[in-house]
Amino acid sequence: MSIVSLLGVNVLNNPAKFTDPYEFEITFECLEPLKHDLEWKLTYVGSSRSLEHDQELDSILVGPIPVGVNKFLFTADPPSPELIPASELVSVTVILLSCSYDGREFVRVGYYVNNEYDTEELRNDPPQKVQVDHVVRNILAEKPRVTRFNIVWDNEVEDEYPPEQPAVDDEDLEEEEEEEEEEEEEGENEESAPAIKKRKLQEEEAEEDDEAEDTDLEAEDEDEDDEAEEADEDEDGDEAEEVNDEDDEDEDLDDDVGTTREQTTETVPTPQDTTESK
Image 1: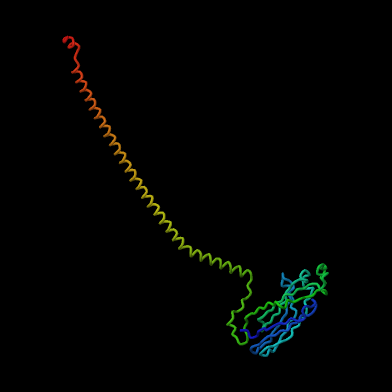
Image 2: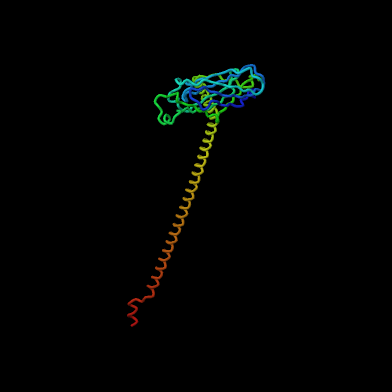
């Protein structure tokens, strides 16, 4: 639980010229006596592309802090125009109001700031060189962005919060990533060994099943060939019997024809017999 709570910030002197000081009326509540002072700081973000242009406008120490609700006026100098890139001097930027206890930041309030020329003519046709005297600022006080951080206070044990992580170089990060990748690969290899063995067994079983099917098919083909041969032999036997029966029938016909001829020869009278009868 935070011992100091920010209750409100009232932005004064707004809008104002770019060269005017910043003024804030800050209200906060302290729940317990504190051993150290509170440090309040105002930072101007000079560029959205680099931290090198950030300017710390002012910082103050407030203390000793009595228990209860407290209010004070915080005034800070304007930023130095020569430390801000010319292309970002007349544009939208950010200011940060932060508070720390014993070197540990526990609250931060951010505001958007719109810097523009004070006349319509300069806004429509800005000069090549920025005219700072004609630049005015407008802090969007109605839409602050408040961020709170958990820190260790006087009555708390430091072990309750995780320690701050030391800075790590890029080389150390790369080495750690390589080690993690190697460990992952080793784990994958260990996991894949049983899978490979299982796959081999499945392949061997599939091969055995294919061989058994081939053997059954060969046996079926042989049985079909034997049945076909037996059928052919039966047909040949039937044809031979039919031929023999036909030969026997031919012989019987020949015998009948011979007998008929003999009978015909006996019944026809000869010419000599005919003459005698006359």
